[in-house]
Length: 555
Image (tube, rainbow, N blue to C red; front, side, top):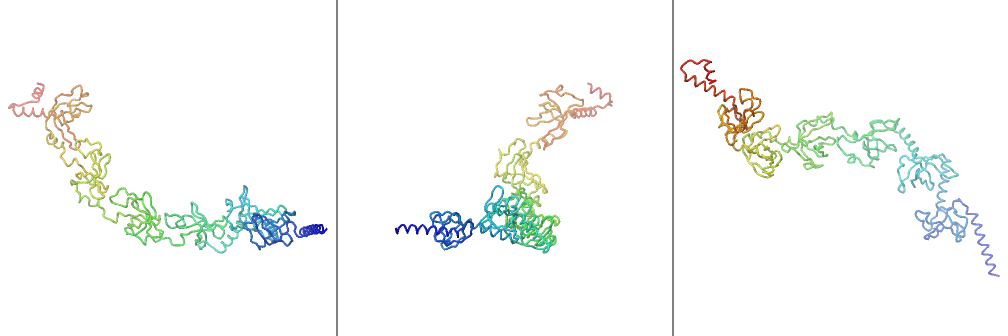
């Protein structure tokens, strides 16, 4: 009997507890519960009833500690394992929703939140428990942004709220537009062109950089970053850097503001003509290397160009990358100044004496010297006359026999050869040398042996359309041009002559350089007639008439 009464009392007690709890615990009713214990699945809370409730531990980004007070709402009216299920997530959402409705009632139009997720049509914004929807068309600067880092908060304008569906539509674009409007009004009131303003570099573009000045981006064009002609933006500016700029232009209607950085200091080119003169020697620093030369900075914002051709008097080809390094200190001479075009022409070789100025005094034409072969090319060899100055021995000046076709078969770099200076062209910086000129030309002996107007006899060695080749000795051959064969016109030489015929001629001249011996059979006839006539006149005591001369000639 006592056991039965205990069961009735227990049953009565549990029903009473449940009824009393349900009177207190209603769905969507915000409550606070004290954390009493935590296990791997649940956080157990005391809400003032005789039975504890529990919340799934997955609902917390970081589990609370025992003794903490947390917001909860009833998740299920049915008890599980003698406990009610509560939800912290739903409580946070409900709390946020009520706060939103209170803000809307007070006229508030803006919400602050973080990007929670990116979907196909837009982004989900977590606004203190409320999931607001941000369409891509309204995302503005967040259009391509994925879930942001914790704590990265943005402000949005509330476009619409549906209490029944508990949905919120927000716009980042409209918020920024309103901020810009307020900014432009402030800019026009506070600033004018020429004023200085502080901004933060946000990003680089091909044509310059964008700078955030209080919520609006101003453009810093690349031409307004530095007075230097050549520079790298990233060496002067850094993304995220905050610094001072000059307002160059304000276009409120177009929503544009142009900024300048180089205008913070005076243009150094305005006084360039006062500081420097042509011929001045200055110190500088290599800032940029190109294939044609280097840019040298002689003071901040002033750079000049040093061409590869102005580096050395003796080196025709200067490899810039092998000669200079970025940041290298150099001494240069100013060759030209153009302040209008902002150009400075520099030279380096002008600081040293030009060895070509007196090269003909040190090595006059006719000088014989021994020199090392520096380079072998298809048309000859280059020999070093002195350090930095080479001379060319052309193929045609290697041998009197003209039998050198490939210099590489006779010479290699480093060989020492004896040469003779033939000609010096200082302006072109060229020296012609010869090897064959060290010995006497065989044709010089031919010239001496066969002076002009001397008579010779030889054998026809060749017949060509323009004349006859006549061999006078084993190694000497002359040419009788067709116009010098006879006083009578001959159409076809092969009808009158054949190879092996013996002929007589007169030497017209010998061209030693061209190795050419010119002969004339026609002049031989004329000279022979004159000699015969002279003999007759000298030996005959009687008077000779023209008729006699004709009869003598006819035989």
